[in-house]
Image (cartoon, rainbow, N blue to C red; front, top):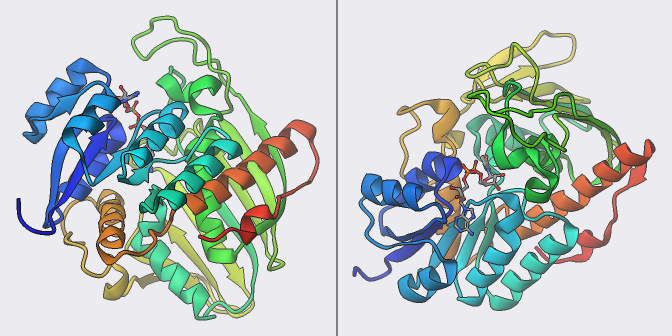
Amino acid sequence: MPKNELRIGLIGLGQVCAAVHHPGLSRIPGVKIVGLCETDEMLLARRRKEWGIKAGYTDIDEFLKTVKPDAVSVSVPNVYHHDLVLKVIEAGCHVLCEKPLGMDVPETVDMYEAARSAGVRHMTAFTYRFVPGMQYLKSLVDKGALGEIRHARFQRLQDWGEASIGWRQYKHMAATGELGDMGIHRLDFAENLLGPIKAVTASSKQVVQRDHTAAGEPCEPQDVEDWVAWIAEFESGATGVFEMGKLTKGHGPGGDHDTCELNGSKASAGYQLHSPHTILMASPGKKYRRRTVPEAFLKRPGSPRNPAEGDPMQIFRYDQAWEFVSAIREGRDCLPSFYHGMRAQVVAEAIVEAAATRRWVNVPTWTKGKQK
Ligand SMILES: NC(=O)c1ccc[n+]([C@@H]2O[C@H](COP(=O)([O-])OP(=O)(O)OC[C@H]3O[C@@H](n4cnc5c(N)ncnc54)[C@H](O)[C@@H]3O)[C@@H](O)[C@H]2O)c1
């Protein structure tokens, strides 16, 4: 084994592992994917073959004991994040965990505190922070190019159809629907751009039953929301309007709508996922114009990917793996860490409460005192 080789294990080999974690991690020089853990035996066998990895386990304890990875990615349904991550931390592994970090705030606090006291690197997979347009937008906000941000709007509109969407449609597996699936990313990048959210009011709705599979077989109906919207007041004084929906026809595959628009005292600017290498920018009295994202923001410094290769709406996701590995190698905190996963969960729970009680809810401030 070469000196300084980082031995990484993958836990949960479904959609996001195959699309993001495996390609992101396996292209990094000095990283070796040393083992796989997946409860679905057929999928495990398929991935071992596809990826040429011998060590494959269906049981996490056996996997950790035998493979002894230095670090892992955890991409299993939300309900399993907490228990698996605690085992991984106990085994001394650095950990990249999917979002939402946990099912509720106490789970995320547990995970964050366990990782910190074990001294392992911890990261929440808030992938959209790595979109080139988002990175450029953040740099413009930070250097004051937009002035004081007054209002902002965030939309994630998609069409997932009306059939079952698997574990994601059940509270006992996912905790929430569109809020934890798409909304939590937008909470994270909204706070990354504009600072802490102080209060929210919200509405959510389960629009369809999803009581059949795509093949027409009956299944247990869903019990989570397909649509959620909220208004947020930021501590800075800015106001944000958010809307997420899985049933917005016209925003189907390839046309997925993901925007964030910031209106400042000097200028407005917007990020759009479907055009990740440009942003929209407008100065007072002028219409929006497209501005190309400068080369410095097209990928994370040192990242082994070529921004000109592959689908730009997908490949930025590999920089998440680069951040995880770089933080481990450099002995620094990952960004975003479990702190940010916990913080987003705190705001998400305020949104759930606001929607249920139909009123404004103050976001608890206790996470602010915690170290990142
Ligand atoms: N960051 C992002 O952009 C993004 C995108 C998609 C999904 N996700 C998140 O990733 C996670 C997984 O989502 P997905 O779409 O890949 O789901 P998926 O259903 O495609 O895959 C999950 C896999 O985990 C396996 N699994 C379940 N329990 C396990 C256990 N105890 N040990 C090992 N494997 C186990 C399942 O068999 C399944 O193959 C979720 O938390 C989801 O919210 C994040």
